[in-house]
Length: 141
Image (cartoon, rainbow, N blue to C red):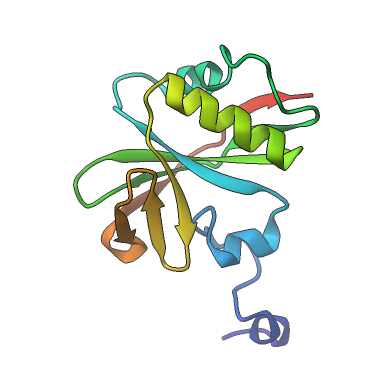
């Protein structure tokens, strides 16, 4: 049963797990979310650390990025990890996009009930497999 506040907001309140980047997630978070492709051969911490390591000059002046404790597989089996960033949104967006290009990673973002991939593909979230896991902290200024 929905609480009065949940009815007003139109989304559940509490500790339910929500897909990072969806409207329900963004109501609770002061972060932007980008999804990064991963071949699944390494660990997330390594990918996370390499993402902006060689970006020069760095654009982000404040804030940080954090993994979102979730994995998403497209219907074709491609794995993506959501990364949240806060503070200097423009700077982090630029650094993450540059790092993803250097590492030859696809990126994605949530638009409504779809994930939109940097190569132009779109998939309904209901067609994707989503798994929640633990968080891994990232860099912070």
